Image (cartoon, rainbow over all chains, first blue to last red; front, side):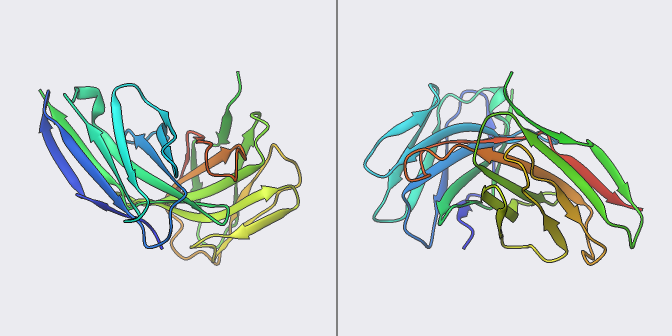
Length: 108
Length: 116
């Protein structure tokens, strides 16, 4: 039931790109993306809606494939501040459920 | 400023005790959620509520209880029946939006509970 994210962890140098994937076993109407710094609350990044509407972040992009029940988050020209754990979230019958998480570390 | 507040930030519990974690929001959100996070793990849903005086079990509700007597408040009680309560607990709230899918969740700063 919990969305599955891949990869589990990513290590990058500053300026490199990364893709984080989120896959659900259930039909998706929307996908949320959040980033959490260690010991802090998750912070909203982006929502993608069925039908293509998108709401969120200027420097991060994402795609949403409704047929495949998948979403991908694209981090381009990564910065040190991008480090953290990324979660996708899906809404099913009023439940907001989060994926398994992807830990991203960006080094200088 | 609108936001969501959890207290306390750190909580220590003796075995066999019940403890209550507070969550208050002034965002006028209908939906509220409680999640548990273990080291290196994702967020697992404990309980959620879409309306006052109504709440639903999440995926790991055993050993926990909640109440929703006011729209702004959604306290979580960790009972003695929860055998492994040491974790980071996060509360979130969310507006309803269109079909409840197009609004983001706002999180509190979390409560770190430790059993001593």
